[in-house]
Length: 320
Ligand SMILES: Nc1ncnc2c1ncn2[C@@H]1O[C@H](COP(=O)(O)OP(=O)(O)OP(=O)(O)O)[C@@H](O)[C@H]1O
Image (cartoon, rainbow, N blue to C red; front, side, top):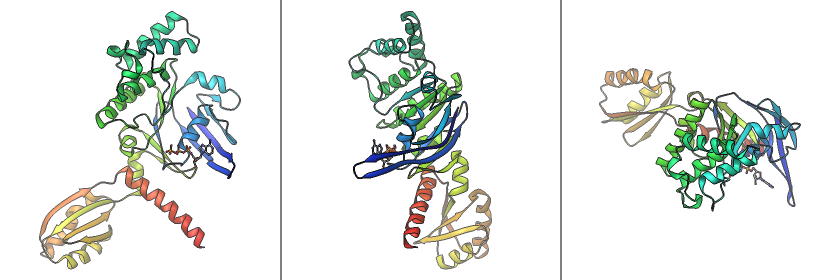
């Protein structure tokens, strides 16, 4: 659905050139929900604006829904929907009227636009709100109207720029549910940017992580967590912390042990598999265990590890 090749953007400013996106290559398959993550200023919005034909790339290109981004931008636009951070709804308009107007802008006849508006109203659970003025809606309701506007022309691919920014947890869940349904029931491919790593974790089939204009990781949240971060087993011992640390650190599958008072934090790959072995080791040495818990890595850990590594590498390069 998306094939980006060497897509790059350098802005010219009075202070000199700003390389916002430094040549990215990636693919998004039909029916996937893909999350685009990165720290502030990493290049997410710039990439999304290029993919949606709103900003010409400095170099590189992309094929979007089978159409060439550079040579067929108008055709690309008919196959995609884009919901920006600001949203596209007209605050003073009633929901249904704004949807119908959007359909008319896409060349539908009045009756077609009205029929399609009713479809997206049902699809996004907006029935009760259809006659409400948009500026009177809650943040979550307004977000759903923005998505409805982006879906009026039945795009195969929907771009969402931070779809749940500033929403409370319940509203975020509600928006996630609608995004999942779009994919599951309509087969819509979704490409979204987010700052919430738990959002990417629970919603996305794959994530792309961009930092300083370059893609630094690309995989399913589960594989990234397994490949990049460790599990942690926390064991609180009754006494003999030093001996316990020595014994556990000597285990070949233990990556690292750190100590805080009587709590040992054991970093390892497969905590569930290792746990029984570690407990046996402590039991043989007659070290009593007071409590234990297993912590699985989150996408935050992956993100911090990857972006830290890169700043570290940058720092090394400067020192070299
Ligand atoms: N029109 C512009 N002119 C000059 N520089 C720009 C312009 N737009 C973006 N940039 C710069 O390009 C870089 C990437 O910005 P971009 O908005 O794509 O990042 P982002 O990952 O979306 O950030 P955020 O998460 O804060 O929205 C930043 O350094 C930004 O200052």
